[in-house]
Every structure is written in structure tokens, then in C-alpha cells.
Length: 348
Image 1 (cartoon, rainbow, N blue to C red):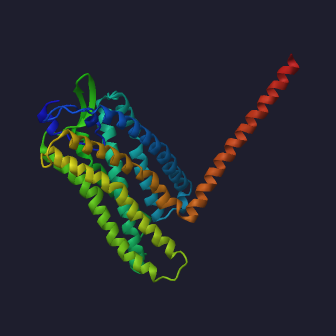
Image 2: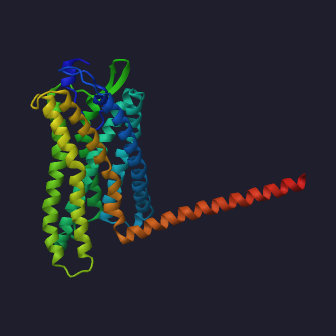
Image 3: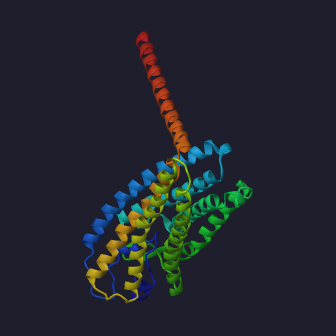
């Protein structure tokens, strides 16, 4: 990889090539320990996120599909949020394999497609959280004015807009992410030829992915909480704690990653002095904070779905039905097996 090409190559959510990039504008640095750490840390955490995220979000989807006839606007938003998280985490096995073998083996199409889906899942998940925040704000602050306009058709239209916006914002990832021929291996990286697309990527990740969503949450919930405090209901303290938890968890999980990406951008532009120690520290910070941010999709089912008593009852019913079906199937298999043994003994 040439120096010019490297200057135009940035780290995105679907670009892991920099873990193995030894070519720098200054003296070669030793990345052996960092690569070893990233393999162990990322693959372990990605596996953890994939399993928990798939089970949690999958259960949300199953519950909402089973009770779709009784679904309301909130349920529809939860359903799309779970789909966004599932779309996001389903790409993690590809990147885990890429990190482990230091070689992209899935072809150029999957390189582009998985990166696009990864980014789309990231943005749609955040956009749906913003949509749910705005919905809560409107319902609580302007209940009587909007009750007649808050309908399923309108919510369906909003969900389509969110998906379209997420796909559109992630479109540069589809266009500029490609399979690359590197030294003794094939890579998969985001490599635009125009530096303006690098600025766009940082703008989209930091502004659309953190600053605007967090600002919306702070504004809406800062006005919702005083209203809830004045309500004479037993559940108000529980709701207030949930609202505060939503904002704090979102900030703690995503802010460190966005800060690390911004520091890497400053380092690549020469704003931060180049050195091996600084380069290693920034890359390690991106690795650690990135994986931490990804675990947020495992918490969404807990934060938005499982805290509701009605939803929890429905989820437990599905889990119990699955366990009962599995138990009945094993019992039937055991009975058939014993019957087969008796018949075989009689024939003998």
C-alpha cells in the first residue's frame, strides 16, 4: 500500500485492514503485540456480542411477530430497532474471521455488501432510538393534540423513511469499500480516491451517529422528566430511572469510540505529532472502544423491551413454550427409543 493510498484510507466500522498495516510515514513500528491483543480481544468480544445480541434481539422479533395483531406504534419501533441490531451483528462473524486469518476470503461482493449492511445497521439502530425518543416526547408533552394523528400507517411511513435514510447515508461505504490486493493477502477496506469522502465519513459517524442523537435525547428527556415528576403515579420513579439510564448508557458506550476515531483522524492529518507510541495508543483505543460500542446492541432489548411488564410476560411465554416443546420432543424420542429396544429384543 503506497503512502498516498494510506493517507486516503481511514478506519470505518467495516475496515479492519489497519490492524495489519505496517507501512507508515515514519519509521516502521512494532505492532506484533497489538495484533495479538486485537485477535484475542476482538474475536472473543465479537462472539459474545453476536450470541447475546442474536438471542436478545431475535426474541424481541419473535414476541412482536407473534403478537403483531395487538401491536402499537411503540411495538413497531421496537421491532425495527431489533431488526437493525440483528442486521448489525450478523456481519460480525465475517470480521472476526478476517481478524483471525489476516485475509479476506469472502470476495469483493461480500466485502462491499457486508460493510454496507454493517453501516446501515449502525445508523438505523441509532435513528430508531431517536425516533422512539421523539415519540415519547410527543406523547407525554402533547398527548391530547397528537393522539388522533399517532397511527400505525404514519409509523410505518416513518420506519420506511428511517431505513431509506440509513441506506442512503451508508451508500459511500458500498461504493468505496472493496477487496484490495495487499502483500501476500487480500484485504477489505474503505479506500475513497477523494479526501472529501473521508471528511464525510467522519461527519456521518460523529455528527449523525453521536452528537445529534445525544442532543435530541438530552433535549427531549430533560423536558419529559419534570413532567413525569409532577405525575402522581407509582411507576414514575421507575420511568425516570429508565430514561436516565438510556442517555447515560448511550453516551458511555458510543462517545469513547467516536472520540477515538476523531483522534485517529487528527493523527492521520498530522495535527497530532507522528510517533510509534502515539500511533499504537490510538489504534488500541479504536480497537477497545469499538468493541465496547458494539455491545450496546445487546443492551437494547433489555433497555427498550424487557423492562416492560407486558412484553416480559410475552417473552417468558415464548421461552416456556420452546422449553415445553423441546421437553415433549425429547420425551417422545425417549419413548420411541425404548419401544424400539423392546421390539428389537422380542425379535431376537
